[in-house]
Length: 381
Image (cartoon, rainbow, N blue to C red; front, side, top):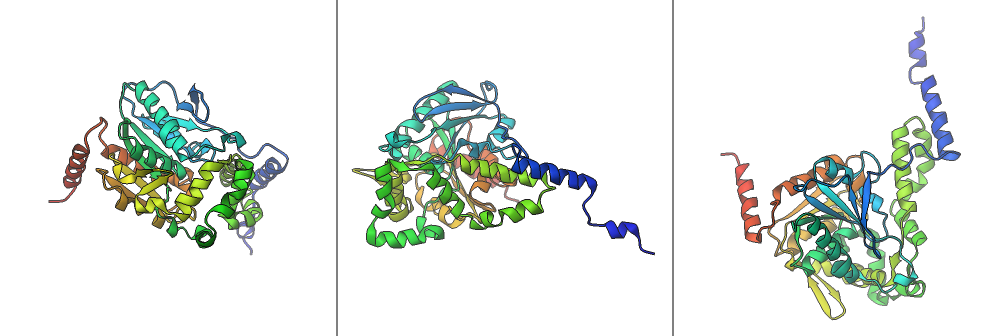
């Protein structure tokens, strides 16, 4: 006789059908399977492109201040995507005091803002304020993508700032190692950056819809296979919630100011300045070799925007840093900082790095000595 249990094995249960129906309704006619939930935070002060938030309640006096520096043209939710995918909540849960800069939206009125607006003004101002809140102590900078570039340039240009360390996640150094932009570099050899920046000069920047579309282009398979993904995961609410969070993140992307976008094209993409250890801006140059604090860089092995190979050269150019650590981990660009596995990869490495860096400001020689002694302590006899 046939076993009824074997006949029904693999078929959806009544609960599965109910879950699928609820999820299908939520995705089409409802508010989504999982509404946006953010870690509690307070706005400490507001200003043009420099709102400063603190996650959690007022920290203990000995809590370590960490300033999260977002990229341009990206919502600050990159550090607080959803429960379980929030670096801010993870840092808070480990007893640190995480702060966040929010640049807000960019309009045509911001056309003249360039990289120097961030590394000479906005970020240093935030660092000093956070340091003051912690009795003048050092501040750890953590930046994802272009936020890492800004953090590195800030530390290089301002040795006087109370910066304890810099962590750059998915931050490319050698742009020749990014295959997705190779066509732009080939065209740029003959046309310079003008075809890329002509429209932005007229509009005052790169509009948000263009930025959102460009980000989607980097993962065409995700967009093409999305209907199949939804159909296949109608009973998997968690997978659909992660998909929703990414869709929400991309829909909130703001634009670039015209001057900064021009600098990206001319100095980073075409000039490949960072690979040479410097950043040219008009008549001035920022030398990355001037960074005198410990630096951690994390690159994604499946990141098409900033492949690990493009991030790795950071170890060659930071000649003045007492400690430069590079780690390659699995993950897409956003996945590095906010993916479901980030807690076991990027976040775990970040916590190890923070433990390596002395809590109190020290000289580069002291940091090197402490790191060497720590390394020797784990070498078997």
